Image (cartoon, protein in one colour):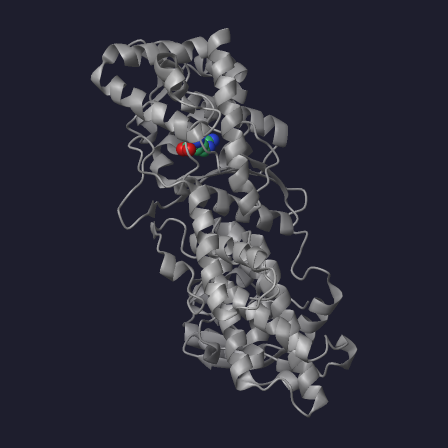
Length: 569
Ligand code: ARG
């Protein structure tokens, strides 16, 4: 497809003699199409050219040659140059691209670049709760999008399978193991033990000490502790898998925290060598006050056991060497901001190449709030994600039954709609915002929701069916798509790849969710304003083809978010 932005920048370069890459970076897509399809803010050049923006704009307008660029009109408004794309050119570009590509928008811009995404990462023997949903869904969407753009992606489920909590579980099991039926309902039963032992720890310092010792023993390879740990891990993974199956999540690696157990001594050695490791009340720490972080990073606790941070440092070393990453993303809630600040700061003392330090990025997100407030495993108030997804499916089924009672494969459709609704909701707002989980909003077919997009897609499919299939692109007369509504849809489709690139620049999948809502709405207006089945065969074919292109992008886009499209609903 023609890259209109690049074309404009090329022509601007000839007039103002400033590098076209720089010029291109200033070009905006105006919110209101009255201001053109692209806009160039001339004040960006005012300093360099020592002229008022308005004068720069007038000057450029006079000198620029837009012939053959696909731009049909240029207006000066204030200090802005507003460019308007030729209607037929955009229609031709977009529809031909859709026709010629199996997957519209797939690209190779990321070729040769390695992205590591650390996400999901639930904790063994604790419920997979709604808080982990966000990590799984955001990380999964990012992974799909990076892959679609040609990057080499390694998705890692950094399972919480190590740490003091296992010392606690082992202690609880020792004390009351025979009171609980772990094989029947593993995570529930283990959670009960965990809550009970935690309460005991709060009352009795000695019990807490015993728990810490258990973990130390586990690290030292004690057979009893190791066997129990393995059992807890296996039963938990089996349960997690049910959630991953529902969500369609797949990981390239399941190396959890325990994987790094034998890789920590090197971290400690390197930190010793750096001269930054100091003793403090029997523990070994790195003081970070010189880089503006008040809380020191604990590397070895006073009883000699490792920490969450030590394991993450070992993981950075391992990932740099194994995956040679350009970016290493960590998708967790903002509660861990300090943790990642600390380990990224300490990572500088591991002697890694600068590129690996630069590539580290915490992709934080807000909490999921229930109408009743925050959730915590320790107090036992968390909702299990599996229950939540199943409830979504049940609720979707009820809505579908009301709307389309005779639908075949209701179960399959309810699954796609219910799970899709939860996924979309999770990705529909800026990730750093807290999210309130409310069923009626999520499943509203008329709202800015997953089901709304699915519904629009299903409607387009029935349009295509009524039209008797998709016309041959060679027979499509693009001049029949000059009306505002068609143009609006075309421009959005044109921007699909740019939208995906924007997601990777900010690690923000909501940019794609927003885009899909805009596209579905633009199609809805197009559909309401333009009759599709008309006597004029040329008009009909062009409109049908545009409908087909829209459906294609809606399906690809939602798939990148991790959703599935129903054929009917
Ligand atoms: N298991 C942790 C939790 O549930 C998240 C791990 C995130 N990844 C990491 N490399 N620290 O909070």
